[in-house]
Length: 333
Image 1 (cartoon, rainbow, N blue to C red):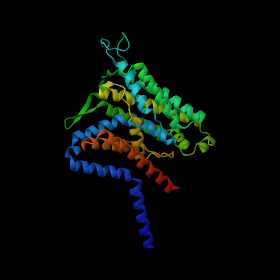
Image 2 (image 1 turned 90 degrees about the horizontal axis):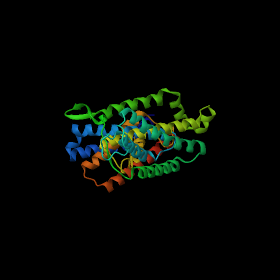
Image 3 (image 1 turned 180 degrees about the vertical axis):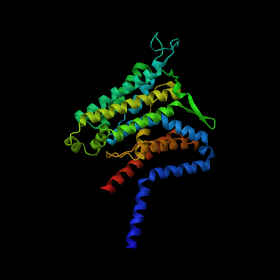
Image 4 (image 1 turned 135 degrees about the vertical axis):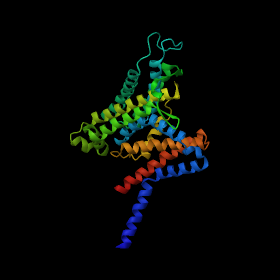
């Protein structure tokens, strides 16, 4: 009996290490970088990691909802880019010589946020309806809308860069002299809202039910089409919000805004335990995954790793995370 219990403990430990291998690897990387470059673990860099995570977290939450449905969304980055351009246009000062819309006044920030979220939600309607109604694969649908949104952006903007400024980047308070901007608080509020939707509403339960078994959910009385459309609307709105925050954070809107953001979000979500097989995911896991993903990218900067190698590492992270996710699923089966 003792031998059996010992063997079971070893198996449980091995499974735990494999299930959390990606996070453990990233933590070891953090330790290595800290030894090489002690500034990596200093307060300024930690605050910077929090700010970067807060800026990218809303997009990851949107992508997470799509993945819980056993799907994905490749359009997020370009939707964010287009939303950033729209936000820049709406916030331009009336006397700006490069003003895109002649005359008029800059819009109130709250109205700008609602406008860009509505623009993102419109893309979400197309994505969700095409998948739910016509049973098209999420990869194909969102790849198509990604290209259409980016093409629309290039056509409308003529690839111009527009300066952006908003109070959301102003500091709320300081930690050891490092400013913490308002968009960190806004990210926390949005995360709280999504947590309530996922965990305390019938709609949230329907998301997980459809992701686990679409046919069983339909038989149980769940409106599958409406659920899918609403998830992608919510995702699109979060992409739009991310575009607004990123444009304000960077200070301008240009053609590269949003580039590969969806890849980073997908990586973060999978690292955080949201499974591609559908029906599994937690808000806490998404938060952790986003922070870990930003930690990886910041670590590469501190180590002086080039942009090309960074793409290789990001790709490897996605691949390894998906392999570990599938292993966990097969073990449970």
